[in-house]
Image 1 (cartoon, rainbow, N blue to C red):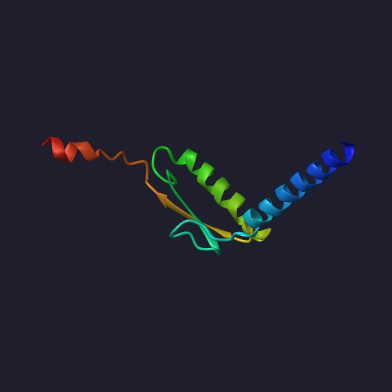
Image 2: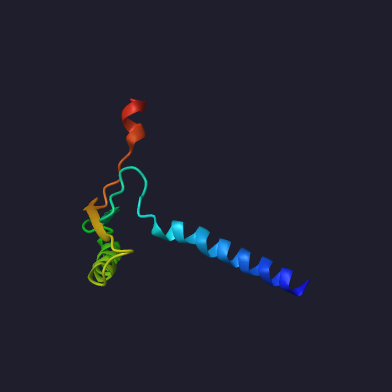
Length: 98
């Protein structure tokens, strides 16, 4: 009885180890996501009345640079794209309302 339980435990452990190896070996990401980079976009107020919040974008940029300098995320570099909105409020509904 003890031998049967031990054999069953060993078989279950082996099955778990073998089934997780395939998941770690995969390097295929979703459609449009290359194996070499991760694109992250941001719109921040770097100028204008709310430019004090621009320091958030600069801090994020420095953080992603640090991650890239350390080798990226699983070997993928972060491509940080950030645009200045100059604190202009856009009202897309104002065009259709007139």
